[in-house]
Image (cartoon, rainbow over the protein chains, first blue to last red):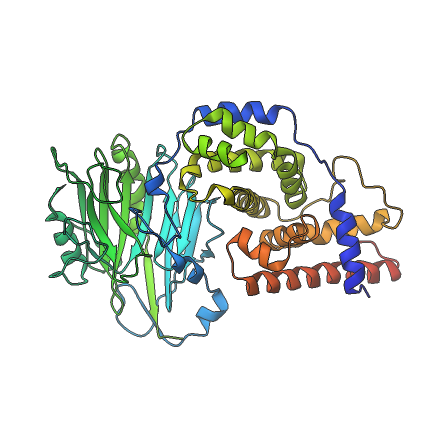
Length: 299
Length: 183
């Protein structure tokens, strides 16, 4: 029988073995790689912090990252699947829980458990998971450049249009996918394509492409003088949830669909300088079509 | 001093970033190696982690938190690397660890082999926690900070990892007592 003290001693010795210095070439290789890797703008990376000046804030809710686990989910009562209003859930393909953020993902089907819900989707080859929290997910796609990303947000609303860019929903819009995208498309400073129908498993959805209007100059307090157009915000007005908008040159596709018994899901495809928009939008569409959401009772 | 380098790197100074890494890369490589148990994979994971750190450095609000933040980036990349490897290699053949072994008359080759097998069977998150605790000397609260998980979760994972390692050792001991040999 191995005692605790034995185990501590053995593991201590075990980890002492092994190399203590990196190969000489590593710093040279690193210098070469960072020379080709631009840094992300700071205001895009301001996550998990409560201070106000981010454009996107994914705050302390990360502590509630809801990869609860398969067992907990399976203990829930009857579930309702996306596009299946009856109480009997249709089986979905086998899925794996998402790994730790900043991980490159093997292609396959994954799930996240935001509250008493199971959100499943197919991830193609080459994608990296960069964020997973109670309000959604973020990926960097294989075809994207630095700054390109694909996001999943839950329960979003059009952002306030006040001059101070306050992080609250704009009044007058409900929580349906149609109202959300209508609000985004009519946001001052935004130019949007007509909404296209988007159906997932019988659920109603729409898709629009949006960019900043030429000549738009209004800056927000947190954007260092750069023109900005806040577009969408979550419904928890504690300055910790997602708050997303447009910078000059940026192109975004918003795909939103209604989840019966819950709210909306938004898949946002973002090309920071617009040059890779067509490629990553094409890459994101099978991902968007693969979504399935099961809504269960509160545990 | 380091704070100046961090701030310079945040403003795009590549040389400052490389200087920061020059002071840390050996220790980070050793950490990556202890989690991944392979020189090549440790090098790959560390290179990728350091490029991610460079890419996202401007998002670090407090330069004084640089080391904790960098540790998180490196450990997360190692966990990701280990997760990918677990999918590819279902039945892992245990190879000797590269590099000089620690002088240790108390640990037999059989002990080390058993530990190696037990360690490689652990989920990557548990491997990382064992390394942070037994190699870096972190308390569960410090592990929680590095991994961005609640302290209770860190304690629980550490407990489970210890239990799994003990079970691996005891199972091998029983096999040896019965005259068998594990593959």
